[in-house]
Length: 157
Image 1 (spheres, helix red, strand yellow):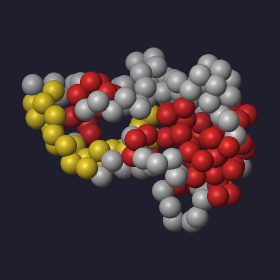
Image 2 (cartoon, one colour):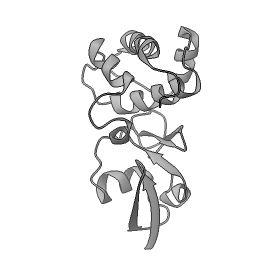
Image 3 (cartoon, one colour):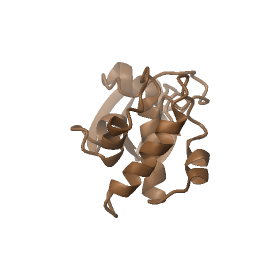
């Protein structure tokens, strides 16, 4: 076991875990932050997506030791009161069906809009291609991203 100091959703925290423990399990099991989901465990489905310094990463395959000194943002840190433009758009477009993949979808979409505030359909499809939705809500996801882009003031996360 080793002690790791992390910054999660702008708050410093310390955990005692093995260095190769995936960040996903630190978030869920050690810190009780269950918004980030386990999907496949091999970084292929996107359900476990979080931001590391603003970039989307798969937390199921990222060892906690690699997250030290980085800014980690989880779905809980996107907005605690659902005021983020993407959360509002997701609700307005009724995106979730089962909802399981949605935290990962939202985190990938947030990274996209932070880098590209007015993405085209093709840019959305490219940015979101690593996120699998078993329910097939891709059309609603794309629509929600466009809606959020229209709502989003420039310079916001």
